[in-house]
Image (tube, rainbow, N blue to C red; front, side, top):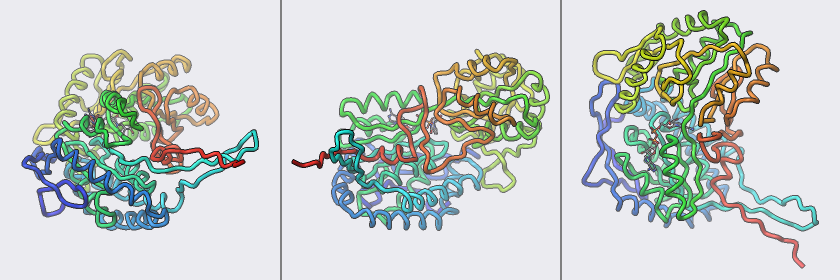
Length: 472
Ligand code: NAD
């Protein structure tokens, strides 16, 4: 953490405050440790105006200069990884190494974009011999709206491609995790012209004002499906471009040829990373009945070995829940776990200040239980048994979500075959959340629209124009 405890927003290159603040709580002790200036409608207008004013010059800046700026962004993020990581751990709760990794991720993506991504004009294949050329131009003002689980990782994949493509940006972080975002926007403003990158902070009340603003051209949003639906509606009147990365209820399907100890360790990690608060966490674990007892026992072993505590303590392996609302929701899932299934590890919150929950494994729970049907977003993990592969594929797909999935098996052909039958945007075999900056991540069904990263994700910050250059 830095020594100051009052953060301002950044608009048009300047620190902006209002007569109101949002208090930021450390989820490890529930104490307010900082405040951030709180935006009002006039602040949103000012941010949009600044971004609009800055857009023509930034869009006209030669691409090579934006690439050079991207390289400097990569260096600055690398140099400040520890400082920003500490801010992130304090506001988010996650273990420090994971918080620092979020900052470093931005440095890597900036470097990757500078080295690999262009928006060059392309001559399109024409069956009639015409010369059809597709050009790409930036869209204008991008609103980048992020949730509280990965405040920086999900920020980079929006703002860095948006900026290199020539757009200007207004960032709106989640109300409970604004500080690391404000700090990086401040740092990046030392490299960017005023108004190119702005940040406003709210008390979870101004997202709609921003997404319906006529001065915003594109919304890059990550959050819940319920909010994503509202974003779509508010974007409709002015036909804004939208990218939505939404909720998930990812199945992990274990096949009967796995090494139980090895697979259980990996599945446990996939379910409990970031205290289970991951869109792509394994949220329903399907295990063959022949190895169900053994697999459950292995999961229990991992849950009991977890050191739950303050994220900045090097001994900690699992931090607290991020906020009071999610903690309260978790109480409901714990109650459901006790009522609908058999709790074999954890099963309760941990006494004392801080939103701490004991990692919880639940077996013998029906697919109809709330814990299975809903996106629990907490370290309460339901383990379900199956006897028939077709049946388990149908159960895995029996959800409105389609974000991710994992398949675990030694016979890779069989595992790939199962993977092909899962209705999700991303399916990993024997690994979890291995991303490639060159590959688009996207959700199927109610888990999103459009995608981030990869050519599709980068091009989504541009408008394509086709010019018929055939001439006479
Ligand atoms: P949320 O939808 O409550 O909030 C996300 C952001 O939207 C916040 O900044 C919030 O202030 C803002 N917001 C709230 N109301 C808005 C409105 N009407 N218009 C515009 N913006 C508004 O989500 P959350 O609770 O912060 O995050 C958890 C959810 O995010 C989970 O469902 C999780 O699965 C999802 N998520 C998805 C991905 C992905 O890549 N698909 C990644 C991380 C999290």
